[in-house]
Length: 114
Length: 159
Image 1 (cartoon, rainbow over the protein chains, first blue to last red):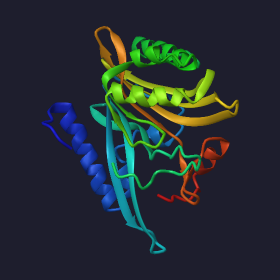
Image 2: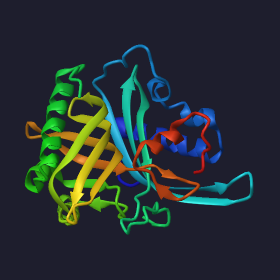
Image 3: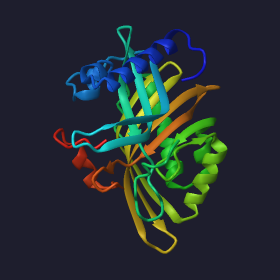
Image 4: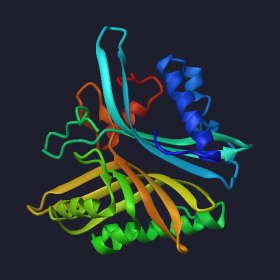
């Protein structure tokens, strides 16, 4: 991440930093702790209306070793949508992807370094 | 789309998306790009990781349209909008259908996220993310109903 961040932007950057750290530690509870309930559940009540909305987009890299020993290394695009509810930023939408090749193979472009 | 906006801002965003979707159906590149900010950053679904700026994205879009003929089908489903102040995030499932120059029919279902910012009284797309999920077992993108298979809670996470 680059640039000087102030106020709400700095708070969101801190959340994303904590979330990345939780992911590295394989702390699933920590990863989802920033997600709005509506993110993981089909809520019965409409989400609270808030005046505060934010979004982030980034190129990420996630790597690790599967239980079977296979090394997994993925570079992907990520877009997050956040809402501030009760003075807390929560992730309400997450979009992760890799592009696919248009050469007729429909292969996912997992080997494209950003 | 079911127009049940929770706020005046959300209603504005729905109207913008309606207009942009119609321009997309008509394959009217000038009209489509008019909805985008000059500095728009796009994660499209085809081949390229990202486009920075409307100019490079327009060139890519034009190249795609050159492979199609006539109008395209473009339907938006499961639209959800988070809007507040001068920012909005919309996400939906787009069902697209187009006819190639050789008359072949192509259909796909894509995930889409649009981020919009209010500019000079109007709204402009400043970030767009398009994708198809891929099956980690085959390494291939999934464009149709099979894409729902991985949404099952007991599906294996291959990433």
